[in-house]
Image (tube, rainbow, N blue to C red; front, side):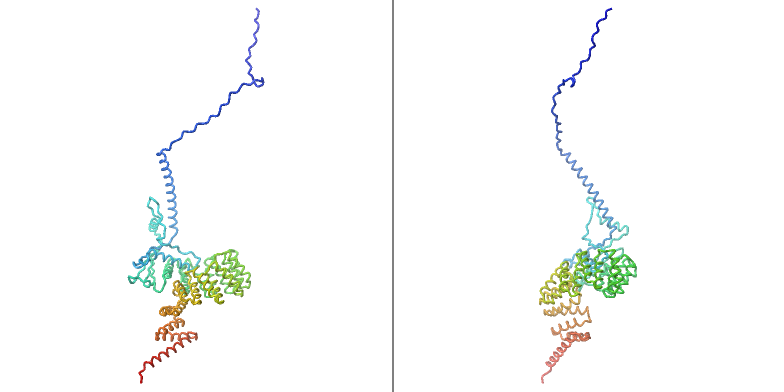
Length: 553
């Protein structure tokens, strides 16, 4: 059987490739399509109000949490810190009309506490007091919680009493003159301590409240109270300091240090060294007593022991100005003046706010006869403090001695204006004005000094003499009398009052004073000689009066 011819197998059409030389046309590129912007949302008032309310609530909650945290922290601090609060002091109506309100009286006592602490000149921290009217009352808003009320009630509940000072001013008459004002204070610190002050007569108001503050400190901080009277009443301060030591008071080391200072001022260095060592026995690291002991050893002549003490201090406290000054003084005693001046200059650099080191350099230069260099250091010291007495006095003497009275007055006027509450500056200014013949102005300066220290004998005596020169004899007599009360055995004020009585023809009173001068003047001073001459004048006057009264023959 014949076979049909085979048909060729069919193959799929071959794709055209790049190798074949043909390329399929690419479709045209389309431009990029930009997305459509989202539709704008319109601000609706309800949504805005809801957002603002939410934000306000968040802020208020944060503020409330912060205020609560601050409230708790401050309240805890109030429990840990026992602040002395001075409550308003009740005053009579007459004083309120004069401006002495209860709040003002409390502020006067506050000032007195500050003055007493400055008067103590101690580096020991003392009580911190504040008038009730000056306190910041902290309260949470919208709650009505007061920090003061919570602390006070909690203290009462736990029997943790806060120290409070209150009281009143009483007067004998309705007019309530300064001489009859009398202050009664109550110090509440677990117990009620009552302090009665004498009438204010003869004492300026600031000094009166300072004395009251010292009495308050005798309850709250006995050592500071003792230190405040150490200069004016060293015998009483010594007795009170020894009492603190016998009682094993927590400030016993400070009391020993104070006794050392009192003995140093009296130049009894043996006792001073003993007390400083007693303070160090209680606290071997008591820096103030260590510095004072090293100084007292030098002043007592124990130079090697002083050197050892200063070497130990210098190793531990190389940048302490008092230590550097002590080493300088030791070098000066040993004859190394240049080394002493170099160390004092370093101390001045360590404490540039103090005029003391520059003035001390002036004193050393003056002691070795270099007057011009000394005056330069004194003037540099006054650039820091125009009233610094260690620099003012030598410049005052130098200018007065050279006849520069105008320069002397300018020097003291600047000091008095810079430190208006410094009695010494006011008194030296008065002396300079007196040299210039400006007696009325000199008396005003003396009056300013007496307003600060009304019981200063020298101020009373000198101002009484000025009053007598200005023909204000009754006022001169009054000041001479006050001076006599302060120094009853001094012939000078007695003679001054006797001469004032003689000027006003009060011969009997004049004779009594002049004869008393003769009794007191056992050493033959000028007052005795002058009193003798005045008594002779009185005898002549009385003889003439007797002769004039005889009947004629």
